[in-house]
Each structure stands twice: as structure tokens, then as C-alpha cells.
Length: 158
Image (cartoon, rainbow, N blue to C red; front, side):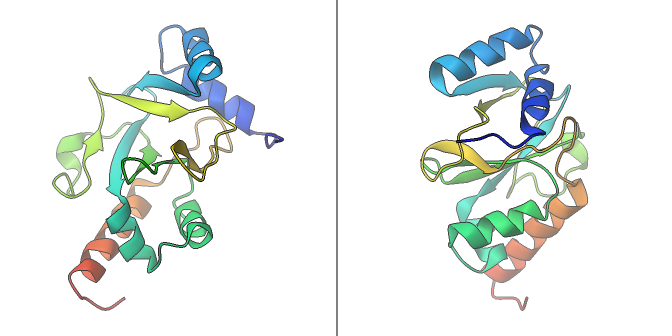
């Protein structure tokens, strides 16, 4: 599988979340995932598959990928845990209005981040790969997705 041109730089940028970025690269090479600290380079919002499927209106993988690409940044999918993680700029969890439904992970927490070439469909993989160094999901776009999913789960109109 070929890796798109900007992905290596974006992966290198994510690796720099660790004090020793080469450690992240070693973890990716050895096991396909690296455990990266959150809050310095990026934070993450944990979205249940149920919430995402409600917001998108389907469980179709291609449709979900297209919808998540509208967040304008990388999104990790863990099909075993039925979760998505939208990577966002470091953001104060206290300001995140959806903590009960879609928890924000930040300082003092870690996230398993898949290797660049893991694009699914099972296990830990990129639903939307990082495409440029430092480009992360838009916080307002993630909030809008959560809001839409909540509204549709409760029977509201689209």
C-alpha cells in the first residue's frame, strides 16, 4: 500500500507528542500502534460508533469515512471498542460541552495511535488519515457532529 505524500510528515508530527519521537516510530514498527500522550500536541474526542452512525445516518464504512473527512483532520477508529477518536488541537476539557456523551481526552491521558498504513476495516485504524503536519479536526465541526448525533438519536429531525 502506498502512503499519500503528506502522511509521513503528519505522522512524524504526531510522534513528536512523545519526548522521544523515535519511540513512537519503534512502537508503530513493532506493533502497529504507538501510545501517545495527549494535551501537548493534540487532544482527542471519543465518539461512540452509535453516535457517529446516528449523525451520519448509516453504518456504511465509505459514507462514514466521507462524513468524518468533513471534520478536516485525522480520525482513529477502533472497531473492537466501537469508538472513533477525532484528533483536535489541545483544548480545555472544562470548556467541552459534551463530556458525558463524547469525552475529551487531554493532559495526563494517552491514546493508541495506529501506524500510517493501518486503514481498516478492523481493529485500530485510521478512519481518516492525517494528511498534513499539525492539521487537526475542527472543534466546532466535532461539536456539530456530536450535536447532530444526539438530536437524531433522540428522534429529532436532521
